[in-house]
Image 1: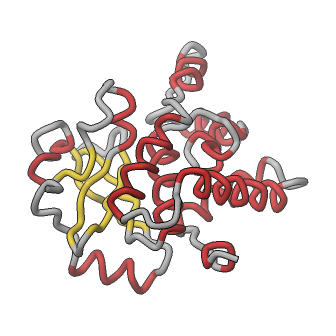
Image 2 (image 1 turned 135 degrees about the horizontal axis):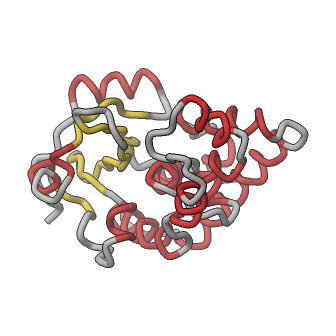
Length: 224
């Protein structure tokens, strides 16, 4: 049995997403989580084969995630047509959104695992979970603009001891899947990410997350 079948690789944010979903679907929540994890394991095994390098695994799963989902414009448009703001909802609007399981799923790796189109945190959580299965260091980056408006989430992944930025959401929505793959901080500061200030990093082990935040936050170069 592969190691990742025996260990838990969910970050704090990923568990939070499950717990919120469980509030609106308590009858089958536990089985839903287990089925979702098993689906992710099968997905990983479909694309990753013995002998692949870390770079090959990262690139293969990066494209595989984007090839198997798309940005959930339909949910956003549906609520906006009702006058409900999805990105910066009021207290009343948030109560409506939080009663909708699809709202939670599109913000979670579980949406990806269950055929629900996702938004940025769904992309980044799914990619991080797959990297965790591969044993490749990866974090989920949460950032907001100065006015604390609509936030954005992407990943940092480590190859050969160097951290690189990966943004599946923007890659999948701008028509160029290679544009945001293994890029430096400087590159991200030129392409639109400069409006964001990183708020937090999510790791599947708290002690390692703290080490990352303190010591390994920079991505000095694009991947060769």
